[in-house]
Length: 378
Image 1: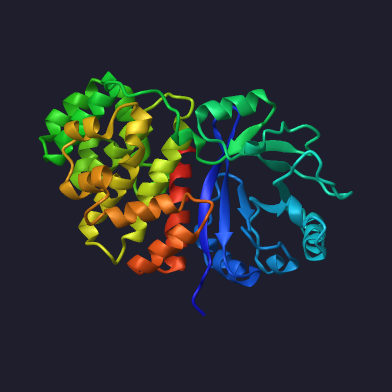
Image 2 (image 1 turned 45 degrees about the vertical axis):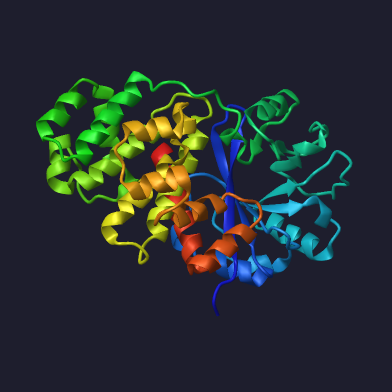
């Protein structure tokens, strides 16, 4: 039977805006469909952080126990379902099996059942209520921007879940020298520049050289041998692969407190688009799909405008058109990547239908992307 459940996601961050967990929201017609969808992704389940699982609009029930739950999963129990006998039955089984629970949509007047521990609590911060009498570490949800996050922390929240960090960041500025250096390298590689010229630039920044080789040899890329030098990388892997890794360096070269969440989002988008594009775009274009997704938040990460960045980066028209104008061959993939970041799965479902993607294909691409992004920051 074809799968009908789609997954969307959002990151969970602590007071310092470091990622501490990933939150997956399952959008399915029933619990059995959700179980089938989750079971199909066991091979690519992200394991670097805890994963909160929300069942969306479904009432949690013991049917969920048919899923062989990974050790890092935390099941969300909406406060509105605490009195439901099916939910209470599930809670008892989760407790007995030692599976963590998160109480979502808690309010200070929520009546709490006895004999249950809540490791985390999720509150809708838009209600304006402080996390008084919360039974666990309390996360704010529904924050509009970075300033709202700061206010939530001041009010006593232990962290937040959501995409607030994409909004309210510092205004545009010129590129820092380190960023300009990476842009220079990217342009050299894109033009298949002489290896000696590229090595000369890298020798001027040993930290950059180290980080590049660390990424190339990371588990996320799955190489069977260790790359010892940039020249070795060019000879073995070619310029196209190095273009991808240098793009990663540009995305991750930020010291802003909010950078880790932005980096994870950008890299997940890129890897998702690359994976989703398998069988839909030419194989030699998939690296450019990755770059499109990875660069989709570059203006926020580097504090400049997208137009200013693209004026310096000599990218293919297919990449620039998607980033600037939401058009061209890569634009549908970027729309899909952004739709994976919604609490509501309807937009993702509509795009999947429009472009002919199955839920299983998109779920797999998203979890691969998330695992890859987390592996680079592990």
